[in-house]
Image (cartoon, rainbow, N blue to C red; front, side, top):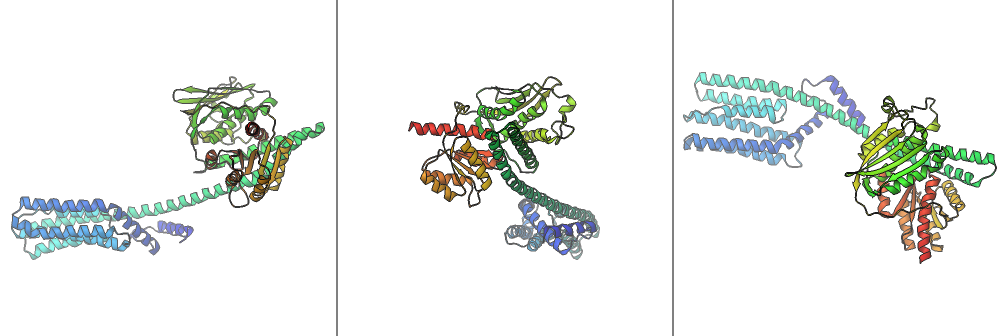
Length: 589
């Protein structure tokens, strides 16, 4: 049965009610299976209790009654004990049907009650005043704990109680005592019957609600999975042309020309970069708000190189706004997800540049006990207490009432808050009007072998690059920009072409797109090219969706992931470092 049809059937049953303790046939069968499953779960505890019950009473028989009487009732004890043991092993079988489980379970209960009733009468008949409280315990146990249906438990309980009264009449036991016992058992059965009805009615209602909740959960999970697939498709399909636009815009900026052309080119490059940031914000926030959309993959890494790279990325924008950048960081390692932490800090830095109105922006890190305190501070206009309560709201822009898209969508700090929660890094905001703003994060301190920082400033881009990109526009745009920067580029559309180019000349660096039209992905293609070259060539992987899982794959493969749309400044910085190391190694050899 399909999920919509099942949901409609459950809702119809819920409206109609179940006072007669019956569902429609399809639901009754499912509820019977549910009841049998509950019986199986309870069976070990209940069987153990029933066995102890019979053994303890058998011991009391031998301690409190003559040996002849004790031996005479022992077969009845063994009958009840055997019924319990056989029911336990039968109901535990994997292929036992729900009907068989319930039937054998009820039969064991009935035989237990019958044996106790006959034991009482057999003892009385031999002159021993056996109390009938054991029969009451069987009744109480059945109605309250066994989990059988109202009809089955009532039939069994009334059955062996009537047998108890009938046997007393046949054996001509004293009428007054038998009447008292019959009245007591009648009252106990009436109370138990009402309780059993209420218990099953509640169980059926709860089962209906749980099934509806489970269907709603499945539908929500399917919707979330569909949204994640949509985000992944949109992330790739939208960023692919946007990446090419950004590279072509950088072409125009570096090509020069007259003043008007340079002005238009600069505005075009700025608009493409702004569009990329808006798209990134929307996709990031959508993914963060979906259950399971983003998961942290923390590990130890050096913090200062990450901070230096971030400040290097925003340096051109800060220079245009006459904002001075400062870095105050101790050489330390932290335990976090570097990809998510980079997104968080990048959002804080861009938020400060866009909205703070500051003359100075600082990024600081220092040790404090077993933590590293990371602060992004500015000397801008600051925030009042009322504004501090609003800045983390979605689409909230305090200084942009006209909703100009040049100042973003108002998602930057909302994403920062979500990322801080995912990373489990406490986030604190300190600000006063006119005294600037400071965002503080606390990261776990980690131990890591200290590495000397590499400087890439002012390095010329010289070296051979093998580019693998199946998108014609993106391949043409990126290869053209790399050649303009001074690199020799072998641009290939597929892995076969790249392997042939590799035979002609060994490159200094590999660049591959992650999603390729052929089988396999960019990481697998890089491994094939490294195997063919017989050496561990430096490699960059370009992807529209830098998920934590992809980042985890890149780390052991020694591949640097870069997100689309490519930021030219970030790309040039990475290329300068990688080509410098590779060409220097080649010169030494």
